[in-house]
Length: 207
Ligand code: GRF
Image 1 (cartoon, rainbow, N blue to C red):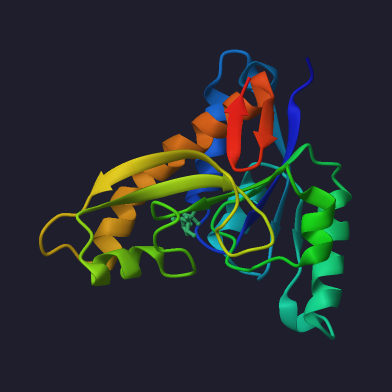
Image 2: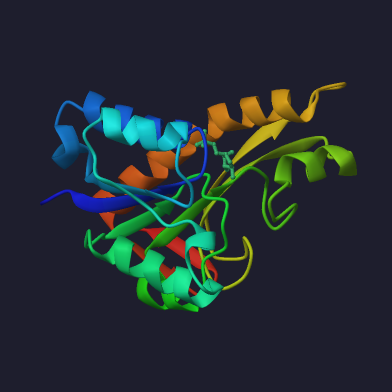
């Protein structure tokens, strides 16, 4: 079976993207064996390590900054078209720090996944690590989920647990979460691509 086509969206350092690229590279069966290949990387800003990683790997990139468009809707339409141009089977938001709009969800709903650095439904939004620390949570972690029209509210695919250590700051905790998150994302993407999946209401089953 041909490898699933992935478009990965990034906004920052792109270590989750790198983990996917490395896992595909390291698989004895290559992209076909892993089940997926990254066909393009999109971003909402220039000059980020995530884009450099893609370029270094010879993967096409595209950039859609919100401020380059007259409205949020126009931006969303442009992002949708730029992504669709690569005919993805799955779209992966890996540290993409923008909420996409209706157009994007209508086009890619049910095949658009996100990774979030907290155990949803706790601590959604842009500061999941900070919010868990501030709340005094003793365990937190990461969640890979399908994206719906809410903020971090879509059906959960898999989660990884990380204990919060006494006195730990946000950066240190986020780094430990990301170690778990990268493995979880690689595992989930590979399994979704190789086995297929069903979404029934909030329940996701990998076949
Ligand atoms: C991840 O923890 C992701 O969940 C969060 O931002 C981080 C992205 O890291 N939203 P990277 O760019 O993949 O290194």
